[in-house]
Amino acid sequence: MTLLQKGLEYNIHSKERKWIQNLALEAETAITQLPTTEREVYRKLVADRINTLIVQNPTHQTHPETKVIRSIQTKLKENNAMITRADKGNSIVILPTLQYETKTQNFILNNKFRTATADPTNTFQVQVGQTIRDSKTLIPKDTRWKYTNMNPSAPSIKSLIKIYKPDQPIRPIVNWRNAPVYRLSKLCTEKVHRLAPLPNAFNIKNTQDLLRNIQDTPLLPHHSLASLDITNLYSNIPVPETKTILTNLLKHELVTPQTQQEILKWYDVITGQNYFTHNKDIILQYDGLAMGAPSSGLIAEIFLQHIEHTHTHTYHT
Image (cartoon, rainbow, N blue to C red; front, top):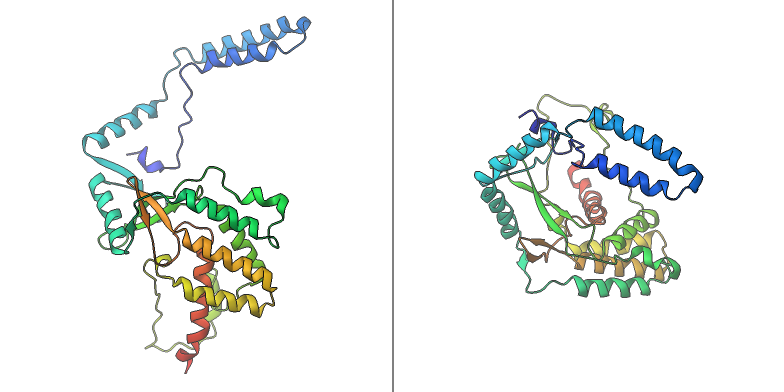
């Protein structure tokens, strides 16, 4: 239990069993690059140091926590269980593997995803390449290589357990780093931030910022503060409507027509490559934004801030 309490970020820094022998071989390889007249002197220095290490590490014992880890792995296997992260903090969750898979599968079923018959990664890679070549205003020819993922693969999903909620649902985490459009998605986020910055009129940084904002607001005994949440935010953002909002933002900031066209083409390509793998299946997501895409946070914020500016006056009347 003590080891588990250290969390999944803990590293025991164990050395390989033959690390001293390997060190001696590496030292000899380096010595052979020296002038002939100097080699024996350095061989003597290395030999003395190696002997000291042997005395200090007489049995080359395995790190004691390695045995604990192996014991944990054995118990997990025998009980068909697994370890995963909790949604928040550095906590870990031990649960039956079947329960973990069921929670993940239920998330997929409840969000109207669909299993594909083939992996679209290669098709998406061709699409990204053409989009980059067509972006003559925003991507100079000599920098195109920076935004092309040379060995792409489908994003993969894993689940974090929301231990603070009833029934302990999952928060899906999709690793998008090797997706075909990952680098272009990052570039899109940077460009939109610069070309059409959001007003952030209703955003707060932290609890202290909230308290400063409301300190002059008269509060009566019958008033209540409410905290609202959005279930599965990314998969519920309307992609076509948000594209219209982004178009209007770019026009309002007097972005040139060619730049607008390239940004909106990126938007279509990024939001169209909405898929991930689960248990070797390719899962397609037809609604909302891609989980894990660097641009999804910004696109969601564009839609939410539009809703705030459009409807907030209703609650002030």
